[in-house]
Length: 499
Image 1 (cartoon, helix red, strand yellow):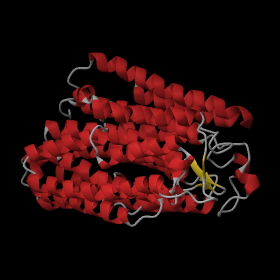
Image 2: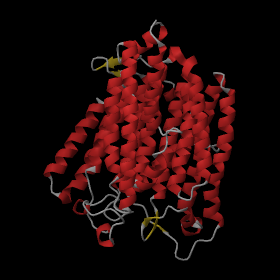
Image 3: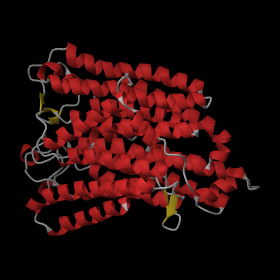
Image 4: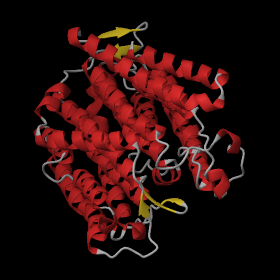
């Protein structure tokens, strides 16, 4: 029902775009999108009250189990905050998305007249809903073909949304093209791996692949070649190094609200799919692929922290931070235990809310060209707006994993699960990477508090109700999960996958 509600709201959004006058679309789309997410959340909560150990539906293609319900709830909550950022029209007059009448303007930075136009491209709302529905099916798919279709449904709207920025049109369109081209390559890897695994197991069902893996006299060449290609597609979508090449450019070029939606929700969906594939289909062969994923996790953490140190743009810095966090999350996914699963699910919840709030704050610091994302523009920000600097400092502490924030609890439960599963060397590498990563977060904090603002430096916009609500939600959840994490940890203790 939650997936059907989201798809229904997306289809109604298409009808709104088709038949309503342009001036009436924005309020209707906002109400429809937020209402659809809330209704989907209510139906999910109603079902979860009496849910048993889990079941499969739609001819066995979708698994509705404890992890799927947790991931769906997380996706709906994060998308609610992200849609609030997308809907805001106060920080950027008329909204951050190119107006309908100006959509065909050539690439490059928009003229001031075009940038100040009052219209907003409202088809971003049904696009976001279609992407959200794809994410929900992606992390609950019980066979690889359904997972591939869901991958395309979640990806194609994101490619479009990345190119809709009102300002810096060239950068936005470049981000969309890069994401599309690299995403097409990753989808091809996924599909090729799916074909090889079908040749090995004679089925695309995860349970059938698990049975063939546990006891089969077939050649393992098809199995491991297929698994390798399949994982390339999944690791790309989760922006795990070294399959992260799209991440910094797309994070920087996409509209900031879309970056928040993508950075939080896509990671949840991708890791949900990775957890399901590894634990349901390939747990019996873990001795063969576990060492490879160790190396991938280490590479992701090293790439994220080392290249993050060299960045001079705040959005690119957060992008490389996400690559490092993907490495930390992969540690929990490799554990293949209930503690590893629950720890990874909690980490996804905590990281998602922090990410949405971070990009909400980034959208507030502006100059004449729009958002001021160069680090030099953030010098002395605490003197211009102490509250914004304080909120951003708290969120950076959470990303760094400082105690009393959700980031600390998330890393603690993931690393604890890894230690219990005999991965102490990997945890040591992760702790060192966390310590190094703290430097580039602290660098921004020092810049905000101990540097003098430039006389002609950027201003801090007063956020509207939508942006204020999104940032407040992210900060409150980040604080609650750091101070009182027990309720969320209990919620994340969802049992195992069904197949």
